[in-house]
Every structure is written in C-alpha cells, then in structure tokens.
Amino acid sequence: MYEQQVRQLAEEAGIPLIQVAYAEGRKTLVFEASANPEIQAREDAGTVFQAASLSKPVFAYIVLKMAHEGLMDLDAPLVTYTNIERFEDKEAAGLLTARMVLHHVTGLPNWAAGPGSEVWPLSVISFNRQPGSAFSYSGEGFSFLQRAVEAVCGADLEQIAREQVFDPLGMDRTSYVWLPAFDSLAADGFNREGESTGKGNFPRANAAYTLRTTAADYMKFLKHVSRGPLAEQEWLQGMFEPKVQAVRYADKPRECDKTVFWGLGMGIEKHPELGQVAFHWGDNGNFKALFLMVPESTMHRERILVYLTNSRAGHDIVESISSLFLGNTIPVTIHDWINYGN
Picture 1 (cartoon, rainbow, N blue to C red):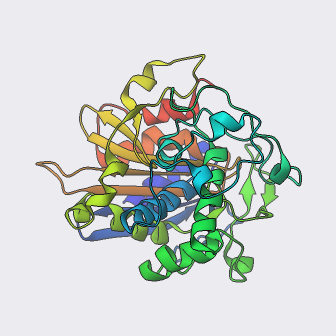
Picture 2 (picture 1 turned 30 degrees about the horizontal axis):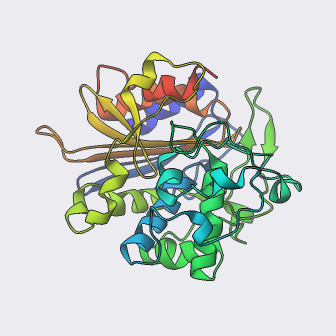
C-alpha cells in the first residue's frame, strides 16, 4: 500500500527515485520506488544516496558519546582542543563550545565559502552575531567541532565514525567518504527539469554534509538513539530536549518558527497531535532527505520515518509523506520551516 502511494507522491513531485524506511515498534518497512522509467528501483532498497545534513545527528551522537566517556567537555572552549586560526574574531572564537555547535547558537554563517571548494580550508570565518545569542544554523560550526574531535581522537572523521557507529550498528552502506561499492550503488542527482547532475563528489569528509547512506542503514542509527532505549542511554537525552527556539532567518521570523526548536544535534517540532517530533533534514541541492521521530503515545509506539531522494524536489513532499505514514490531520510545520522564507 505505502509503496504505491509513495510512488504516486514522487511522480507528482517529479522525484526520480525515493527510498523509505518506516518503523513502528519492532516492525520496519523498507523500500524504494522509481518514478523514472529509466531508473530501476532496487529490490533490496540498497541504492546509496547523499544524505546531506543527516550527517549532523550521526556526528552529534559521536560527540555526546565522547562527552559521556569523559573524552570531551561539552562546555569547554573548543580552542582547548584545536586551533582557531581561520577565525577573524579570535576572542569570539574562543567562546565556542561543543554545546553551542550542537544547539546551533555559534553565531556563525552556514559556510564561510563553498565547503567543497579548493579555497574553503583556508577561508576566513566571520561571525554573523555574538556566540550564544540566538539560533544560527551552521555547517561551519560542525566542521570546527569536527577538527576538535579529530584532534582528541587522533584519527579522522571516517575512522572515528566507522569505529563508533557504522561497524557496531551494521551500517555497511554508510560512509562520510566515497567507498568502492558506491561506484555501482550511488544514485545520480536530478534537478527540477529532470536532468541528471551525476553522483557528486566531495573532496574531503565533512561532519556537516558528506554522509552517504541508505534508508535502512540510517534507520539502524535512529533506532539506536531513539527515545525507546534512552533509559539505558541517559546521556542522549539532550538530543530530544527543545532548548533553543529555531528562528531560521533572524531578519525574517516566520509563524512556523514558533513551533520548532533545537536539541543537541536534532530539531524538535512541538506538534499538537504528534507531540515532540524530533527531525533533521538534508539538502545537498539535487539530493534531499528527512527523518521524523514521533514519541510513543497512548495510541502508538514510537514511530520513525526516514526518506532519501535524488531530486531537488525532494522536500516538496514533506507534508504529504508525513501525514501518509503518521496519520496527522494537522500538517507538520517542518514542511514550511524547511521550504519557505529563504
């Protein structure tokens, strides 16, 4: 039932390929659907997609685990662990902490320069506002925290993630870097005109956006950090605590901002029907992704939905696909928060 309806949503939006994983309790449904006759959906739902900013919650988990193990202090200035040479304002940079990065209150821009460019590693980072003053979504902040984590661990991001997350959870088709298997498994991205733009290439692993994965693999991660087993992992509670009002565009507050907050590495929408819905979206241009985690209620066990697309139109269906699986009659404001106001 779901597969046919999702294919219809993809066809109407012009999304060539979509991959879905949905879990309720112990039951998990995984499939991919093609709306392009030239693209064959894999029966094993094993196509690998760019997950874009779905990279961030995985990295946030690693940081929280390090803090739990005493390897890093969430409230210690990151200059304790790594240099601040790229920052224009050294005094402000000296105030930045891991907690600020995970809450997106660093005051930094999303990027100082295109993160895939040759100039980015040496580009000067300036502040948009005072650290700690307000929500300011920033990949640059995550990259700074990545440098600190790598310095503490004495290893690169991919090695750390493989040891701490991918291998223990059996995420065999997930990586921050290109794997040989991706030559045949990775999806091409498509623009709104239906033109292929290729698989894309990242010059370096980046905790903010270079994750490639499958919906099934990412579901393994989401189940691991879900609110179900949190009694055994209290150190992950901060992921689901709505601490920061997420006004995405400081100069242009919107109605949808009133219900969206940020925890340590995840967004949280306070929804009148679904409760506190944890989420993160991914946007690498012609690859779009999203997950929603709905808390347990009197009617349902915890529910988790993740979808990956290879299309610039991938976020057009946030409202429709969420109501299809979650049954809410009041639309999630996440749709508007992601799509409108830029």
